[in-house]
Image (tube, rainbow, N blue to C red):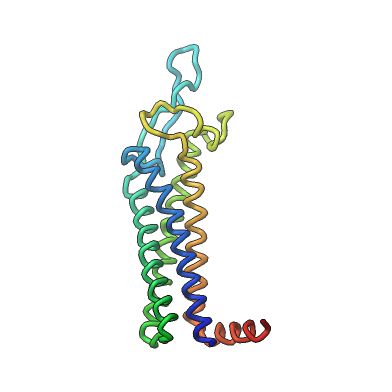
Length: 207
């Protein structure tokens, strides 16, 4: 019963990681399509006057962010999505068949979880730092009357679809944080299974 509970906990954890990965991949992919392959992360620019009487009329990009930053973030989300789906299916199969993980597979799953946490940590750092740089540029480090969130409702005249950039990156950052929490919990579950089994057994008996 305890081993079944352990497998069930792993299955739920991988399923939650799958959902969180989906939450990351969708908005980042939409942003990439909206920006036609250009990356807002780490983009530098400033507001320039169209004439002597107008101030901060148009935002001009001085240097677009590296496309690799956005591509890696999407790649990390897809990697987490595929691994979480595969692991969820595997644990569900073992749970239904009453099989147990061998020591080798348990160790391999631990390495996979640690690897995903590491990759997602790098991706979340890239998104967080890069998005902050974009917001600093578009708001001139807070000197603009509008916040970064409010500026997504304003046409920046970049010939791109920027009406949802803030929501897209904000949702992606939340999803990335949750992925790290899911896989960190799964790595602890795999690293100390005897403790988790004991806890699950006590919880089951109390019920």
